Image 1: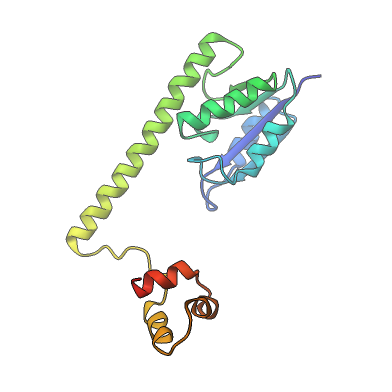
Image 2: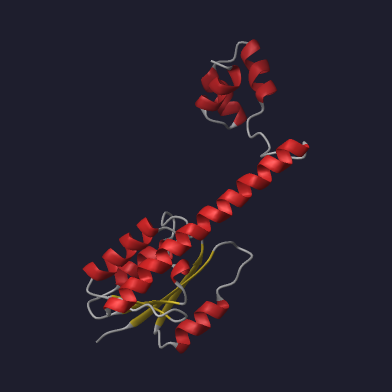
Length: 181
């Protein structure tokens, strides 16, 4: 018996998977797993890994769009290879992707390239915005996570780097960076 298994993903906690989940159920998925994780990597995406492990020969993994599955060609190829190894197929509800057909595979590869391109453009725009903010003197950056003055004060008092790291709850390498050694 074959199954249609759905996978939904949103990038951030304030986004919602409800629309994707409904589309996957309407497409005949008997199981739908969803998570709120970035698509730029497969690391930490437990629901994706669960779905891939659950696939059996003849099953179909269904997503609404390919960018819900992966944002890089390398990750997409690895996921598709895993699906193929398990004897399953991949389909998308909003795109003509079906790895059971040559045309579906070709379209999948094109969409993977565009998803990666979109991610690169977004990163480029972000870097341009940061550069502009720095030039205008309005970029603050991330707040320092290491209290450099406290590290230096404790070291001047004769406290060892290991004890400083324990007292301040930071790594020893951070202590050495703060001390400039």
